[in-house]
Image (tube, rainbow, N blue to C red; front, side, top):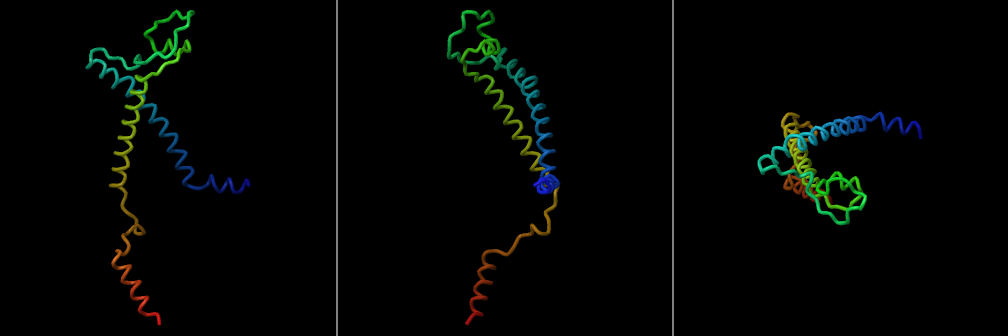
Length: 141
């Protein structure tokens, strides 16, 4: 079993995947910072001080022992109040769209830069395959 594991880890695909996951996590952190620290404040400034982080629907009561700001999502969440934080969801959705777009652009560029392999050359068309099959069938008695 140890030899099988060693052969599995030694494959290039596994190492490539590990590198991709690490780079992806770092890239995700950069995009999250871009969204939360640059894009969302700019959107807030354009729309008159809009702060998506404090957009939520409170579902449960505020505990009597709560001393924080009842309009603060973070404070209410820390107090254990049941809420739907749709502002944070909007921010996460924007993060996803940015990451998706950047990955799309990277793959598109990579496909342009990487020449197709000779093995990937187009095979015979359907008509050519059907003609070959017809010819083989005609040869049979």
